[in-house]
Image (cartoon, rainbow, N blue to C red; front, top):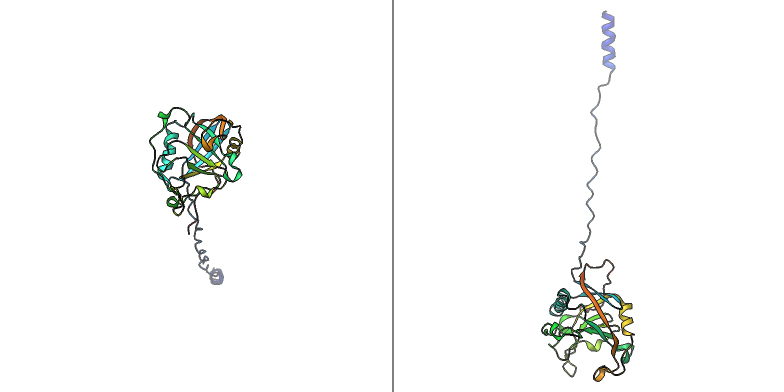
Length: 231
């Protein structure tokens, strides 16, 4: 018995006590990648459906608030439904190309004239695709507008030029449906309708605007050209 106890103690003495388990330190925290905030395009987009097809325009409400709001007023009130594209400047040549539209029916559908927003103040320009207001004198624009199909820098305001020097008021641009605008530009004209420089430019038949409504910003909308680069 005594010998068995000695053997047990000897065996116990040879057992190495377990060592404390030491875990490796945790890896350093990896900071989350810094991503630039997604810039949401808050500018209004309007889909214009015509007898010739569909176009989409984007409005510069921050740069030309009065003119853009006027256009949206016609859209939101549905007064633009039934307006016409009635003019093409094809006779002026490819360097001065535009199509013009507006109220060709009941003048009572026109809202009051709006203040003129000159391009030297808004920072917008008459590049290809620009959406601008038709007028005779600064401050008399109502419902008529035009879409440029070529750059026409001479339409920008130029305080150093002769005449009224105020140019036309750009307030947005065409972002899709250029082919539709080109087809309207190339449509048949009357040889006799119109007055003055507009003789030979009046579409015959006119192209009706079936509907105009706000839509969400298209995912593939181009950056555009109407905003001038900062000096």
